[in-house]
Image 1 (cartoon, rainbow, N blue to C red):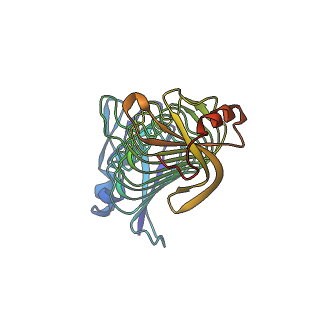
Image 2 (tube, rainbow, N blue to C red; image 1 turned 180 degrees about the vertical axis):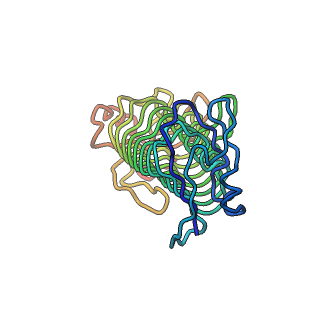
Image 3 (cartoon, rainbow, N blue to C red; image 1 turned 45 degrees about the vertical axis):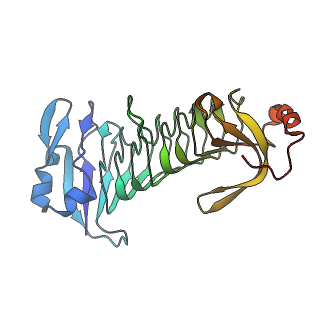
Length: 282
């Protein structure tokens, strides 16, 4: 069994809908779900005022499923703190998707705004579209970003992916903006496409892989070798990759892998490898 929500109209102001999650819905009757409180701007509404609410027979093997259809670009906090089941979104979605997520699966067939998977601990988020800033990041003023789970983006992402990330995996099959992996502590970020630069700024630990082009590498990173491949989750990504260590301004030991064939302007770093043993590892 599952629940189907259909947006009744295109929302013009932000909608705080953190009550929409498989955890919450699985414990309630259909009438109780319809009477859940949401905020449209500063006005308290009942869920049924904004969405058509129906039961749905599903064959999902992932447990209780909530499916939402419509333009949700103003709808925030969907899947907030969810720990089980599946949330399927057919259309664009607003900020804070899957915030503090602790399990289950979220799938979006559309674009998503900023703060996807902010401070998530477990579970999986997959987005078949582009996303905004601060994916898997911490709130401003906090140093606790994503600590576990998986975020898969099939489009592009903007700035500060994985800010203060402490664990888990982020895979982006498009390109990224600036400061990917800023303040990163642990975990893995993989970018299939290009980066706009400043990757790994103030990075302390973890692994950041850019398979596309980068404008430059921050001077606070030092080259330590060339690797033929790199492990991302259970996959092995073929290179070769330049391997840098940093950020030295933070006494960091993060690993930054940059595609060698697509970044010929970085080949001057190779002269610094002279004298290092061929099997040297940082």
